[in-house]
Length: 146
Ligand code: RB5
Image 1 (tube, helix red, strand yellow):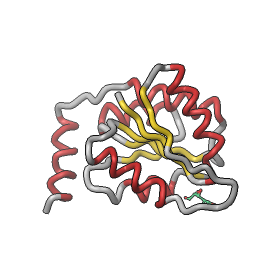
Image 2 (cartoon, helix red, strand yellow):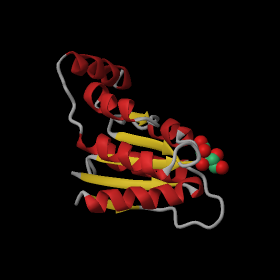
Image 3 (cartoon, rainbow, N blue to C red):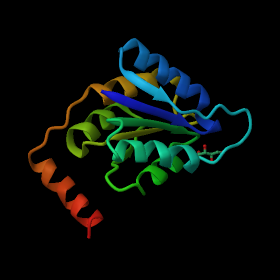
């Protein structure tokens, strides 16, 4: 599995925590920043990361901003991306099982690092269930391709 990791200035600290988790799990990842002291714009990081998932260069992305909302809105504009905004362990698991989400978004100003690290671990290690859930994802893809 290859993961791309990005944040804006509001997610720098949590991005480092997630990088530590991916290293611990021996998951291959690329961290594209931001390397920022000042303010940056989350679409400048979220959209390129989501595109690299959509194009098949990476299997998954983990995107962090202050709330996770800007990153999730941005990533979901990219065709083929199913970005999930997650702040609890239940939806971390179920969004992989049911939605086959390929982008995880979290907000550094919403949850603490301990929970965020557990969410990241759960999300990267949970498999899609397929079956009836595949039909629903196919309908989303059909809409995108209209
Ligand atoms: C940046 O201040 C903040 O708006 C951003 O990190 C994010 O929360 C947007 O959704």
